[in-house]
Image 1: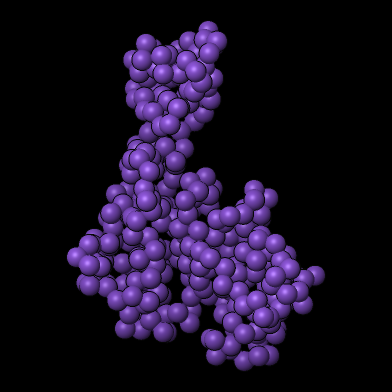
Image 2: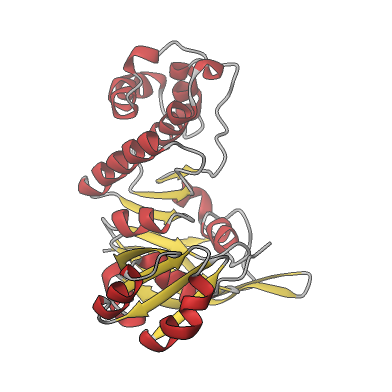
Length: 303
């Protein structure tokens, strides 16, 4: 069953095409990553899918509802976790869940019945009556995630859910998201953390300038676009080493800042050569989704 279908979606602002003929198909029960640099069109795509902006052309179908024509009906079955927490500081943890559930027309007794499970899911059972100002950043993020579940959605949109969290809080959020997909829910996730996408997403699409430039499982994309091994070389002598040896010894060598990234199918010779150098340091690792992302979208800084 397909939970989201986007066909030839287009949207322009001030003669600039932000979404340029985008196609997406997302099956039920998967975590789907929508990746791209700043300005790639991710947020606009989410707004179009939620019916918050109207497309110039194209088709959107969510859970069988055409959007924007039936966006209201679709949103009643969707959970949304925005990039910035928008919890009400005047209410307690419990009250935030109650008030949010009322927006969906749910009866108070039905919301009350769901609250214990939502608090347990968020790890906030003991903070039920706490004010929002007393919660840590990780607690607020977990509460925002739990709040998005108050209407028992089949499909969830998460916009950079772990931004600003420390490693412990990030891993806890990841565990909660894996639990949601194991229950059969569908997640559309935007993130700038490529390790997050690689760990959580069954499939990812990389978009740039409003166009989809690659799609597949993380492993498929790594295999398709990147040599299997990477050696990162840095230190005072890195540039001299790269010019005299590194560039010729690797299939591809790219510089970002003061680090040289040597991509190769067999890193043994490069590593042995580096072991004889006294003024460089290196990291030898397998290729990952971040390498794919940087190859396809470029290493230059985006504003």
